[in-house]
Length: 301
Image 1 (spheres, rainbow, N blue to C red):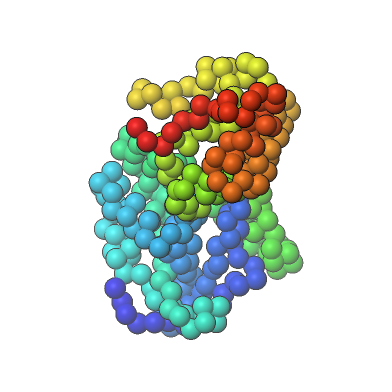
Image 2 (cartoon, helix red, strand yellow; image 1 turned 90 degrees about the vertical axis):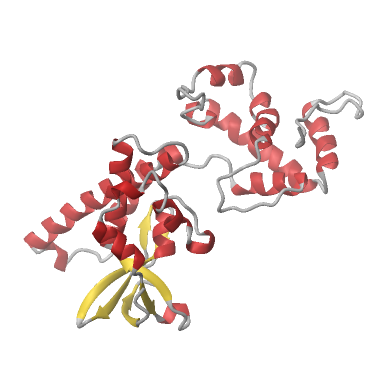
């Protein structure tokens, strides 16, 4: 890695690049007398749906045996030589970044790996983000080229391209919209005594079963049975879509959102899991003796 530290001559502290709900600060540094557009490694990691934890998930992902064969020498060299830079927003602390075009190169490599059947499991989610980003950047690129050719770029609003990209990405990400808010998992983990990390997509195997008991089984009669029939499964038996993606916006989603909100409210009012069980029973099995507890799944085999 080049240990030289560069100073950002332009940055976007107030107007970051928006990709869906993700904000990515952008920088321009002067390197060898030429301007270089830079994104931080952590922000690129976030844009690919890998979270921000430790800023190393992107590197680990790209070093996976499924991906390595599709990383060309130029990209590999760039990844091994991040650019150290500082800017006023970092308080003088150096950050590690890469030229912005590296993000598109990463997307190309991941999509090539997917097209060759080399990606599976959770990595397919990253490939989906890569596909969305690639199409979004291509769309905004041709708009910018037309604006430059016609001279419109001189009078357009400085944020117009950003808004176009944000609207496009948000539309593309709609099927991926997180239906369960972080507070649902935060409170569930607190009551169960599990360590909670909002940046991790990994959940204990009991979470899905508890979610069925707390949420889906309390929807109107027959909804859960229908959901179990609808989402198609992969050859390995995994569902391709989550239950909430099958629900219709105008009929079933309101029931889902109401149930989630009710359960979160009960969770927040409870001091421990046993306390929550009693509150849940009072709310959803009124009239039964309190000692007739729900048969919730246990977190031990």
